[in-house]
Amino acid sequence: MDILQESITGFPAFIIHFVAALIMLALFLVIYIKITPYQELALIRAGNVAAAISLSGAMIGFTIPLAKAIAQSGSLLDMLLWGGIALVIQLLAYAIVRLLIPTIAKDVPEGKIAQGTFLGMLSLATGILNAACMTY
Image (cartoon, rainbow, N blue to C red; front, side, top):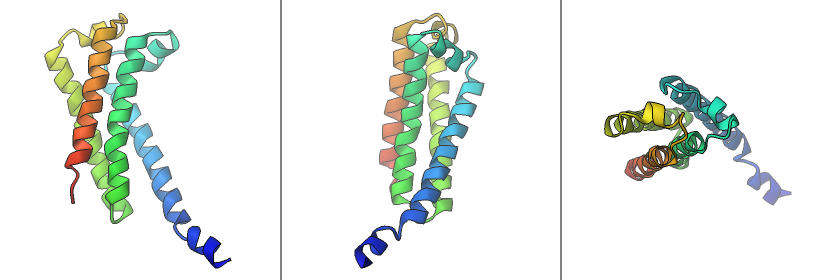
């Protein structure tokens, strides 16, 4: 019985961090969808592959540094702070793509897969670099 008790000692912290991470992910998605001038979810429901790739890349690009923040944080507040930094960095990645490809706001709704893929992969690359830079 001692082994089982030792194994589940960290369960409350797991639940708290997991729920906080899901809330942060939902917050990121709400903000991201609000700042883009097109409706990703409606486009995805309609079968728009460019929208699916771009939003999926942004979501994964946010989740990777969030996971790193969870793994390295000393407290829930620390995780939330670094998760907030990851959120801002991902929003900046979208802004950079808007500068590099000024037509992205119409390209994704038109289903242009190359542009949607570029947006998604730049978001993913930004998230990987963001996570790697989280050394504290």
